[in-house]
Length: 244
Image (tube, rainbow, N blue to C red; front, side, top):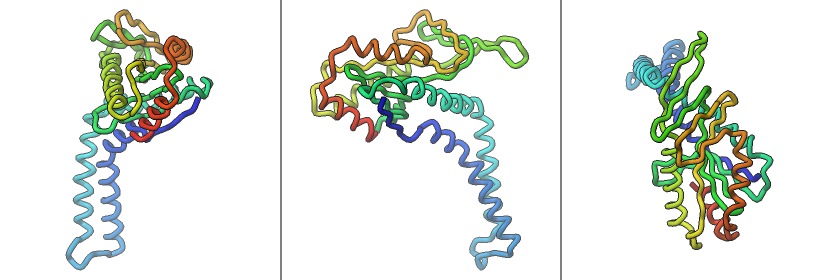
């Protein structure tokens, strides 16, 4: 399989959230170094100003990190999951192209993985939850064993709804941007759970939900059911996604 990696938008989120703490620490350090070596700027900008500014930035960034610790932990788990999908698909033939971390320009839409096959396109949302995943309509939750041995349940956002909206956005971008006729183009939304200890209990989902172990077989099988994408259209779509 041909693989194209874009800049990881999840990493960008984590860096953005930690910027205040790191930036504040750097400013404090610079201020202390300036004091230690007697460096000043003729009364215009004194080292203590760096220390005060750095302290404010450090404290504010720390508060933000504490308030969003749970969300950042989910992002970090997502990073681990995003590495599993390319590994799972690496043995698929070069008739398929995998594009990772696609952010559609001008739209609030990030897609973890897009596979452009011979006959279909697959928009993939990857999740790295551990435990039993329950999905019924709009209600999604997980059941997980804690460190003390007991079980606890939590709610998660509906990933099927998320990737369904993203697929609609992707289709619009392709329709608006390529010169070829896209009437017969098939885009399949897929939710993939990547953690090895995940058990799926999905009873009602309009979107295909599966474990990463089953992803390659599903893509190859589903792709074979559709009409072949004309070569020029396929090339235009891949170029379009590369430039997002």
